[in-house]
Image (cartoon, rainbow, N blue to C red; front, side, top):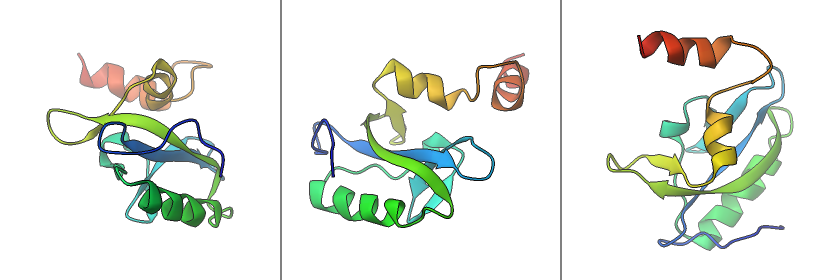
Length: 109
């Protein structure tokens, strides 16, 4: 598997992909998938992350393009993005104001 970093305690990772049917971003959680990135499983061990990636790749009927994304453990223990691309993906599609973006805006009012 190709990756640009090795998950560790210093550089944890999450596995993210796109939902095959809906196209939105999803994150791996206990072998399943969630649309909430705060519920993603945080991988701090290379071998466990590699096995989870194999599992994700094997779920081609559910997701497309799974990959490891660097993350960090937030103050609440949940994963947070370390790169702007992943922070951007968490907000949902950017082609127009709808879905996750509209929900986030409504919750900030």
